[in-house]
Length: 211
Image 1 (tube, rainbow, N blue to C red):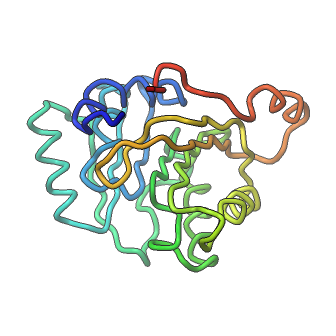
Image 2: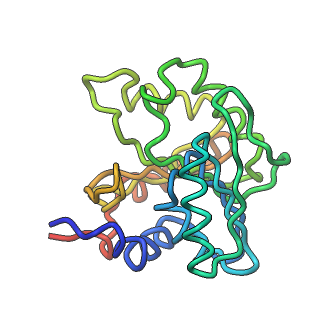
């Protein structure tokens, strides 16, 4: 059963993002934010002491997002206009979380080198041990790149997989659908991580599962 996107943004989205690691006071980069389906609930969680950087190359969708933010009284969203070729206009080690939702796939980043370049930039702007959240849409086994390709590239960029959430409701193409979310941490493999992952490798998000 699909829930309207507006309801997800207003209620379920905020709970979902808290469950997967967004916290009050954080600085978050929503890379490829579009019209703000993830930016808006993230900004509510981050609060007045946090910031959300909304980055996109589409000026019209950023305009729409900023109008939404103004109408909701959200003053902690900063727009970042960019092009595909440019880097991320943020300082080194300046953010706690990067969201890559419906971004890292064949349509936007068909070339492995472009994905690696993006991941180097993500690594640069993230603080030590900070969080990379991946919603791996359009990464099916019959497409290129495959999910295992992208996961390997992320790990080669010095991130490790902390946990996965399966069967969660996410926004995709302005609809809600059950999908997977993967949490990566900045840093090399650390001692004891494998033991922890026996428990954390795959889990559901009970508050966000419907049906």
